[in-house]
Amino acid sequence: MAAPMTWKRLVFSAYTPAFSWVFTSVTDRFFRTHERRRGSTVLLLAPLLAEADSGPLASSRPPGFTGVEGLHSRFQWMADHVPAFRVPGGRIRILHSPDEFYQTMKARIKTAKSRVVMASLYLGTGPLEQDLVDCVEEALEHSQEDHVPDLKMSFLLDYTRGSRGKHNSRTMLLPLLQRFPEQMRVSLYHTPDLRGLLRLLVPERFNETIGVQHIKAYLFDNSLIISGANLSDSYFTNRQDRYVLLEDCEEVADFLAELVGVVGDVSLQLQPDNSVHMIEGMVHPYKGNRAEFSASAQRRIMEVVNTARVRQSMLEAECSDILDSDRMVPNDTWIFPLMQMKPLGIHLDEQVTQRLLIEPGGDSVVYLTSGYFNLTRTYMQLVLGAAADYRILMASPEVNGFFGAKGVAGAIPEAYVHLARQFYNKVCQLGQQSHVHLHEYHRPNWTFHAKGLWYYVGGSDRPCLTLIGSPNFGYRSVHRDLEAQIAIVTENEELQLQLQQEQEVLYQSSTQVSNSTFNQPDRHVKLWVQLVTPLIKNFF
Image (cartoon, rainbow, N blue to C red; front, side, top):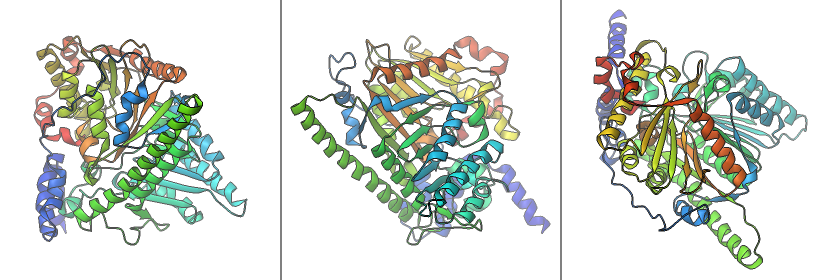
C-alpha cells in the first residue's frame, strides 16, 4: 500500500497546470480511441501553451458619429449575435459595496414568490453563507404555508470547486434538498475537459484550473443581479467587485433563468444523499463521448439564445412601427447578454468584446478593469492598436486574491506583476504611453475582483456603454470557463451618471503605473516565477 501512495504523491507534487495538455492528450486517446479526432479533448483544450493570433476585426464605426444620439443604431450589430432587450434605464441600479450586494440578495430571497436562481462558482461555508442559506430555507417554509408551494429554488455551481473539502457547497445545500426535494434543485457543472487519467491524477484545487462554471447571476422573480462576485464571505465584506440590479425586467430575467436552466440540465444533479447523477438522456460530461457532450450542450444553449434573439428582433420591429406612428418615447436602454463557453463551442462574448475593443474612435475613452489582468494576445493587440485612450485598472499585489496564499499559489501575485510589466513594456516599445495607461488598485485590508469596462464616446463626460459580469478578458475566460456578462447600452442620463460614479470611485483608489512602479521592492519577481509564468499563464 505504501508504494502506490508514494507514487501518487510524487505525481501530485510534480503536477503543474502545464502538464494537463500531456495528460489529456494521452488519456483521451487511451480511453476514447473510438471518438473522432476532431472531438478529442486535446484539440478542444489546445492551444494550452500558446495562442493563435486572431486578425483584428474591422470596425463599422459610422463616420462623423458624435454624442449619444443614435446609440441604438450604433450598437445594433450586437443583436446579430445575441438577444437585445429594450428596458427603461430607471429600472437599473448600480450596487456599490459587498454588503449592499449581500443584503440585497437576502432581502430578495425572502420576498421571492415564484423563483430564485443562483449561478455562481461556489457557495462558501462560513456564517454569512449559512445566513444566506437560512434565508432560502425561510422563503421555502413560507411558500409551503400557502399549501400550493410555487416557489422554486435553483443553484448552479461548479462541481470541482463546489466539492472541495469535506465541508463544501454541496454539504451546505444538502439539508434544503432533503427538506424540499420538490422545490430545490442543485446542479453541479463539470467541465468535459477534466476526464480520464487527468481527472484521476490531478488533485483538488489544481483540477479547477482545467475549467469551471464561472457565471455569476442571481435572479429573484423578475429582478436579477449580474456580477462578478461569488457566494462567499469575502465577497460579502471586503472584496471589491461590481454589481448591477435590474428591477422588474421580466424578459431579461426569463432569458437568464432559461440559460442557467439548460446549463443545469447538462450538469450533474445533486441528490439528498450527496450523490450526483445526470438527467436521463443527457450525455455524461467526463464518462460520455467528449464531442457528443459538447455538441448536445451547445445545441441546447444556442437554441435558447437564438429563440430569444429572433423573438426580441420581432418585438423590436413591432415597437419601431408603433414609435413611428404614435411618436411615443421609447425605452432608453438595451441589454445584450453575452455568453462565452469555448469548451462547448460558444464564443459570443469573445466576438462582441473584440469588436468593442476597436469600436471607439480617437476621441473616446475606455476604462477597462480586471481582477486578474492577463489579456489574451488578441485582446492585447486590439488595445495596443486602438485609436481610443485606454485606462486599465488591475489589482496591486497586496489586493490580489492570492496574496499571502500558502504554497505555489502564493507566487501568483508575482506572476501577475510579471505579466503587467511585460504589457507595460509593450506599451512603451510602441510609444503608446499617451493612449494606454495602467492603474493599480490599492485599499488596505481589501482584495480586488472588479471586471468589465466603461465606454465614453467622444464629446461625452458619461459612459454610454458598460460590460459587467464574470469574464476577466484573459485566456481562462475566453477558452476554459463558462462565462456570462451583459452589455448595457443606455441613453438614460441618470443611469449614465451611476456608471460614471461607479467607475470614478474604483479609479480613485488607484495609482497610475510608471516604470518606477516595477522597481519597487514589492514588485520583485523571482526568477523561477518569470520562467514558469509563460507555461502556466493560460490556467489563471
